[in-house]
Length: 74
Image 1 (cartoon, rainbow, N blue to C red):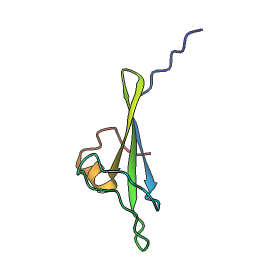
Image 2: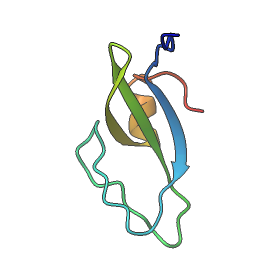
Image 3: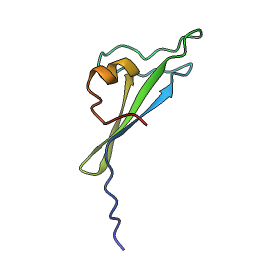
Image 4: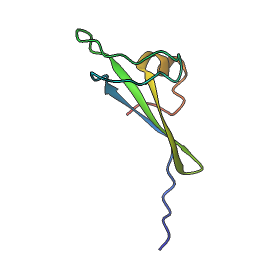
């Protein structure tokens, strides 16, 4: 039987962890961990034509300002 699953891009919010080296896809600034501040990032799995292509990281504020390009965060 053929696989009929069609994957769509999606985004989730996660706390920024120590050692994170991601760059925000919207503002090109590092998504940094700060010990005294509970900050969050958005991680988006991006699919092209139903196939996984890449992962994009955003500051939560940047993702919202960009109009949630991969839908509402889970």
